[in-house]
Amino acid sequence: MRIVVHAVGRMKAGPERDLADRYFDRFAKAGPAVGLEWAGVVEVPESRSPNAPERKREEAAKLDRLLADGAALVLLDERGKNIGSEDFTAWLCKWRDKGQRDLVVAIGGPDGHAPDLAPRAALTLSFGALTWPHQLARVMLAEQLYRAASIASGHPYHRA
Figure 1: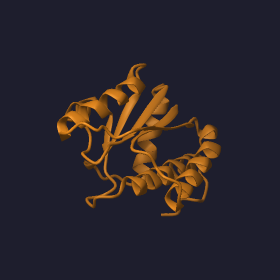
Figure 2: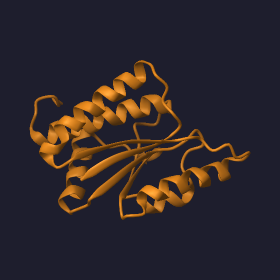
Figure 3: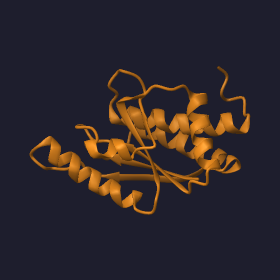
């Protein structure tokens, strides 16, 4: 299953980008052995619309292009499910085993996701009740993808 991250906003050079890139690189190397292929990050600019609902609609329209060929959608949202790494791995492997070809994990803009995306999501995932900067959410997602590949392969990286 190919996994792509759709992120609203650009991550500037710096330690957060370096760390995210490090974990995405680890995932790219570890994932194929367990049927998880890294397809990269698609960064889209934040909408410049004057109101939040319109910004969300414009950002969702860009996400729709990635979903057009039947990709499953995971939304990162503070109101989503707060699950552990092993459950996240099991969820990914279940979708992989069902034959899902593509998975898009979406990190929304400062206003969040358009409301019409939630019913289309296979999973709405939270990294806890705290609000995280988008840069750190990307780092945490990259690490969890690598951790999922490690768990799925039985690698000792994950020791809970």
